[in-house]
Image 1 (cartoon, rainbow, N blue to C red):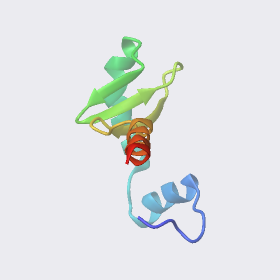
Image 2 (cartoon, rainbow, N blue to C red):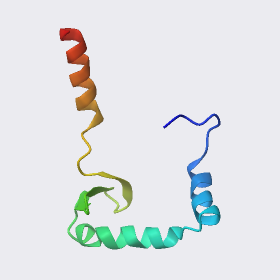
Image 3 (cartoon, one colour):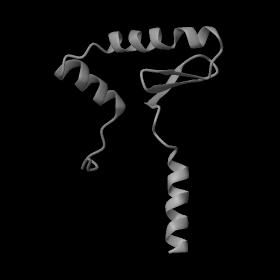
Image 4 (cartoon, helix red, strand yellow):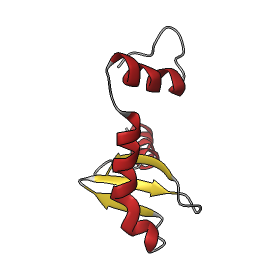
Length: 87
């Protein structure tokens, strides 16, 4: 995906989803909260559900959601760099 010509804040994206597309942001927030509830009760730092990893802060906030099968970016860049250097 191309980088936008003008920066767009996270706040603007949320308002767009809410007001233009009609998404219920609070319902999404509740769904995420229900997904991680059991993990939070047991002091987890992450919850894996439905093929996604929900990363949690020490205070219990969900800080990001990413695909469970997504390889860490630093490993791939290291491998590519080695392939180029060994080339």
